[in-house]
Image (tube, rainbow, N blue to C red; front, side, top):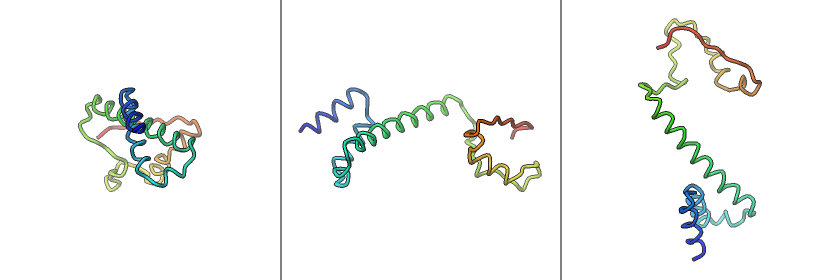
Length: 109
């Protein structure tokens, strides 16, 4: 009964991600083997991820993008001077961790 009260309290606090993750933990036998810190960490991570995903969805919707573009859909057959290996290297994000700047210029579309 205490578990249901905890879930309801989490929902009242608008921590729906934590409430969902806690419900799943209660049903999972392996979760009982985890330490308190591990279980709490999983709950917090789930809530944070849920909020980040919601924020990203809101921002994408507010951007009113006409076409959802993805790097996997780049057509290298069209002569645009794109270097496939350079694009793949940029997609790793290593330039971000090394704190380098990136400037892309040229026509769009």
